[in-house]
Amino acid sequence: MKKGFTLLELLGVLAILAFLGVSSVILFGKNNEDLTNEDLKNKYREIQQAAILYMDLNDSWLSNFTENGEAFIKLSVLQNENLISKKMVNPVNGDKFSSGDLVKVCIANRGSSNEFVDSCILSYESENNIKCIANRDGNPTNCCDSCNH
Image (cartoon, rainbow, N blue to C red):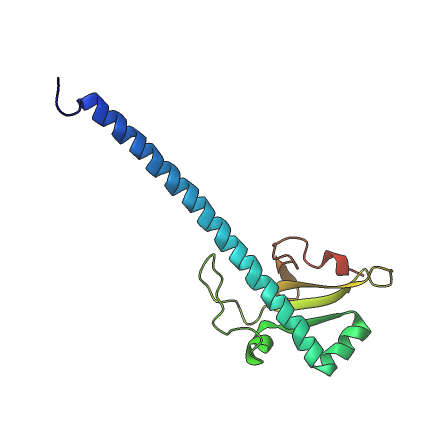
């Protein structure tokens, strides 16, 4: 009768443990990335909801919105009104959101029977350089496409 384990048995156990370790690291790494992206989408939605609330609280914005069908609100205005945090950061890259970014709130499908309020976040660097940051769902595509009159 032998005592202990053979080298082959020990190597087999180590290989199984290494496989489980690598698998869990890959699985948890992917899950963490998904959570970070979901957190970013939630922050974009929070910013857009703050813009709509700001318009509801300020009659001058609301009347302009009703007349033109759209309004642009700077993030700095929402921060100054304490509707969003001045310290809000992008969870993906750790940068603060730019106070110069704009929230576009618009009436989608204007003139039809299924009008609704849509919003998106835009990065405004110049008249010719406006890019989509996030649509109403927090995704970086199709910014306010439903609002194009």
